[in-house]
Length: 278
Image (cartoon, rainbow, N blue to C red; front, side, top):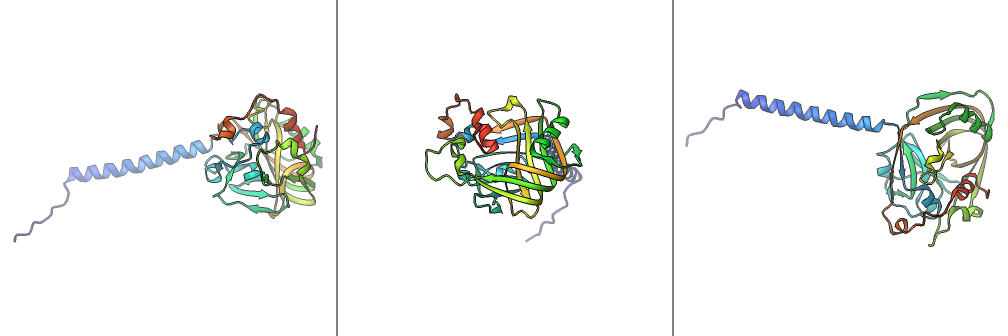
């Protein structure tokens, strides 16, 4: 039997293969560049609707794994209102009503969270001791756009921190958060280092979000945290990322579809934010 000798690909075929290979590399590069550009667009992403969550929608529906696609910095709530949620440097932590703070698995879900890819464009050093009210007044003096969307990261030494967390709910129908203030557990810390993760959001975003200031705390050793109730800051550094857009994904659940949005929950939101009835 006569054997056939395979000849090497012709020059035109080789050129086509090289061209295809180079185009594939170029397409991959453009795709990655587009993803990177999208990641850094200073966008606030919300999984859920604030007033609906505060009104009692505590069942988890949005995967943490998906949340990472929209941010590395933010706050929210764990499943079944089991404590307080914080995201810092892309890592998620939960502070339970027992005070225990632990790292969260990306396999879990949240009923409500807001995140962004944090990239500071301004840095401030107050260089003096500040109470919570004084801190907010200082922030107001530098965040002067009343309709601006600001992500705020505060790191440093605190003379005093008071936080809170709610215990998990167990049975439907769930009560609104403002009706469960007597179930809060408070935690107090003296002379502690850590981070505040939060936002200052404008009034026109009220309802879909919580307008004004909203911060969660995480200690340097990652052993303490919670929603901020009160504080005295000693030596802190304030980093600000000015956001220019916001997007939202809503739960596709019967509870959300039947939720009554006609009720004005502004006072409820204030009570929940401050940890006491207004």
